[in-house]
Amino acid sequence: MARPRSAPSVSAASASVRTGGRSKTTPASTRRGLPDRHGAVPDLDRLIHERLRLAIVSALAAHDSLSFRELKALLRASDGNLSVHARKLEDAGYVASEKSFEKRVPKTEYRLTAEGRRAFERYLRHLEALVENARRRS
Image 1 (tube, rainbow, N blue to C red):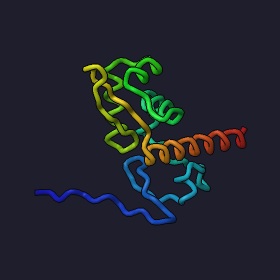
Image 2 (tube, one colour):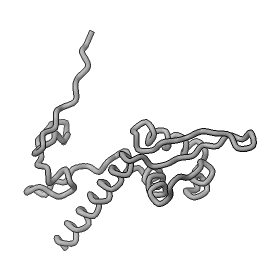
Image 3 (cartoon, one colour):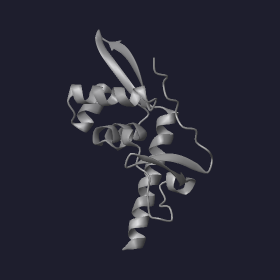
């Protein structure tokens, strides 16, 4: 029976980044969204970067909480699409949901967790660094 692989450890100064099937070590400044001396920039948080998940996190960052119906209307998403992407964010710990009944009708309320807010702010800082780098190169 094969042993499960453990995640690589991350030191304060470097992290493992997958590139073209090979691992390489990158400086902490690159992980923060800043290019390293070779101009390489790490990947954005793929969990948040997907369009509908980014929209969900953005909407929840602007509100204390939103119901499934409110999110669906705001984002113009289908029931299936919204529930699948909300579940992925929930599984990652970025979003919390609370299910209840209102006049015998199920109601799901979503809110951004502290971890989700930190991930969203990190994502925004990363984008800002990319934009700033692009402007400097123009």
